[in-house]
Image (cartoon, rainbow, N blue to C red):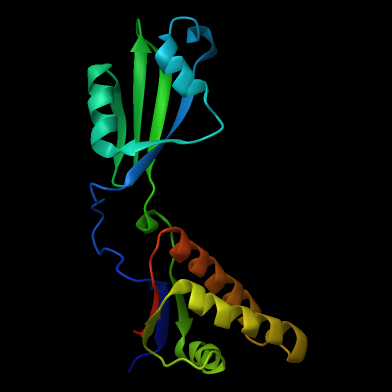
Length: 181
C-alpha cells in the first residue's frame, strides 16, 4: 500500500547524464602570484565577477584541452580543472551544470499530510501542473494557513518547501508533478 506522495519537477532523468544543450557555469580561482602571467584574454574572463560565464560542456572541454588544463575532478554535474605553471597551480576552474537535476528538488511526504495539503489545493493525489498555476494555489493556501488555522505537523514548513520547488520549476521551465509512491 502506498504511504508517501512525492512532489518534484516533472521529467527528471533517472540517470546522471547531462543533456548536451545544458549550459555550464564557471567559477575561477586564480593564485595571486600568477595574475601577471595569465594571458589578458583569460584574465578578463577570470576577473569578471558580475555575470557567470556559461557555455556548453563541449566548449569548455575543447578550451581546457587546448589550454592544457588538467581535469582534477569529474562528476556528472560538476567538474574541476586546474592549470599549472612550472609545477605550481596557477588557476582552478570549477564548472557546474545549470540543470534542474543538479538540485535536490524533491519532497517526500507522508500520504495523510500530502492528502491534507492537496485537498486544500483542490488537487488529486496524482497530478502535473504548470508551476505558476500551482504556485498561485499554494500562495492562497499559505495566506489562509497563516491567518486562519493552527498549523499542525509542520504544514507551513512543507508549504514553503513546495514554494521553493515551484520557483525551481519556473526557473528551469519544468512542470511540477506529484504522485503516490
